[in-house]
Length: 399
Image (cartoon, rainbow, N blue to C red; front, side, top):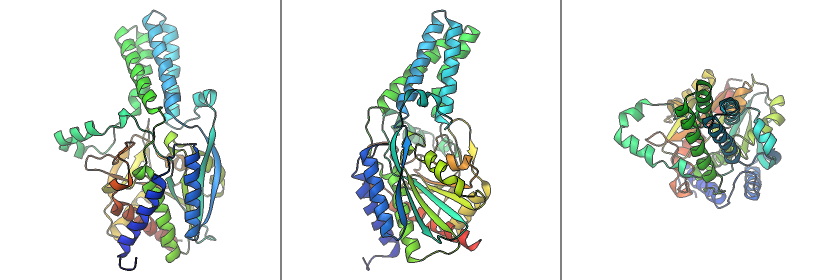
């Protein structure tokens, strides 16, 4: 490989990691997810890390509990339409609250009552200056995403081609979970106000949610090359870079979580285990989340129900390092979905979520069968690795 340029050599290694893991079927809480975790821990150990697989427990999906709640909301709507408005309003209100707290990483009461947690695995590797009192945690996740008709990007691409100026002005993604929560809320409001049309509209929306969740729950996963083997490959490449050129003054934790696709299943037990030993004033998080699309970007905030702005000072530091390294990094984007970043953010840590987007401001091949290694923009992944390395060295230099 001596004839390759450094950038090309990095991309070759990125491709090898992604291709090896994409061949493993990796739904959350599955044997394949464990196989991927063990493969990754061994690979990080080869790059000089102290790497281990940590067992944890998580719920193995979101489609079934969300679909069940929506079905209960539809039943409440039918009851209200048949004259039992008080009962319908109370049940629909409870459904709306349950949906909102579940998708926004609340206590998840409904899941606790109706589901059993299953084994998942987080990979935790230590590199950098192991004795430093500053820590940079670099996140990714190795479970693969489910698919379903709701993830078809053709309508979004059509809208972009038809109304490019509108897409260019819109930097906050569509709130996919709002209609799901609005459905039982409409039923409750309609029942309280005696408005049959609102009750009927909420009932229909709840039924559509049920159909969508049934489609997602069919246990089909895609290879997940972009989401999020691109981030996992970034962890391996960063470990290699820090082994070749060690950093002093900052400890680096490379963490690949399991069960991210069930809405942050692995990062929550990681936080329970590790946050007490990570002071918020000396720990930073960079989340490499789907970094294989054409344009590297930085999320300013994210949140399924309410927007949670990430700490501005650390976002600016990341952007400064991108500019200093000649790395193109788009700013100003906000997401109405959630990544593993929301858990450390709520715990008080500075977080930077590095993503990548298409020209129509979507994650390329998101939750779709085309999310394969052949469709990765490896130069974007390499840029994400270079940016994260620069951030690590900046934090070390500022110590």
